[in-house]
Length: 117
Image (tube, rainbow, N blue to C red; front, side, top):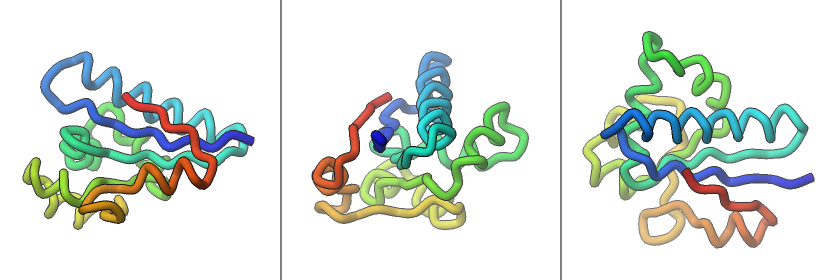
């Protein structure tokens, strides 16, 4: 069974960025529905999405909320993009294994496929 680490790098600047985030969340849902593991990592400008998707009025809040146990955020980037406090208050796990960032190497070593959006 393939496992996937889905890395969201898209910021919140354009409608196409929202499309990338929705596609990433749908991909994670598909992997999980098929019995595989999926980790959703908000990295870089992607960390800005967590406060938006935490809002229950957001169109894609439910899609995001269904993945709560799989959501991670880059600790360094959440600080750089000034969303660290909001992420700390969310259910997302803050990751900092490699110089403040999530370790993609460890995920690859564990057999995860890396998919970026």
